[in-house]
Amino acid sequence: MKVGSTLRDNMGDVRNDRQIAPAILFLCLGNICRSPLAEGAARAAFADAGLAATIDSAGTGDWHVGRPPDPRAQAEPRRHGVDISGLRARQLTRADFYNFDLILAADDSNLRDALMLRPADATATLKLMLDMVPGRTGHSVTDPYYGADDGFAETWSDVSAVATALVADSTGSSG
Ligand code: 4NP
Image (cartoon, rainbow, N blue to C red; front, side, top):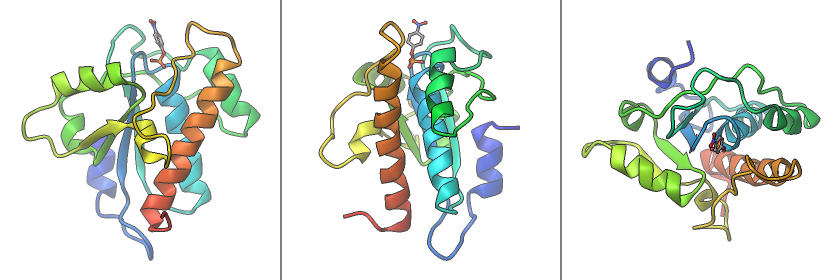
């Protein structure tokens, strides 16, 4: 099972020499383009660094629930050796605001929609994905869904920068 709560219960207190495993949820609109790309980039970056983390993604909308990532979104990470074909879209829930430490939204619209769902006593921190990247605070990850295929390369580049920054934060090696 890949639902955040179960993984969080199992991994919330995982420690190694350098870190406490963070639980991070990436959020976009459909959960078939930007947030699964971010999930794939982050899973790869934490695994490459040998670090434990709970990483998941979700959409604010429910149109694509149960579906795999868009074929264009699968193709871009495959070029970089990352396979996201097994991911399946799900919708953001109120429980996510307790099960994750950090919820990272792709754009302002996703952030606003998440704020409307957020329980008053939520424990998760809610931010934009690019708030993690020095020099890009407040910027959105552009939605490639309606654009040309090369938009997916830009999205992959953006979410890879986010993943690198998260690993750096996790090891205390940033700044
Ligand atoms: P995502 O992209 O939010 O990055 O997954 C989209 C996917 C689907 C739709 C919009 C954006 N849609 O309207 O179906």
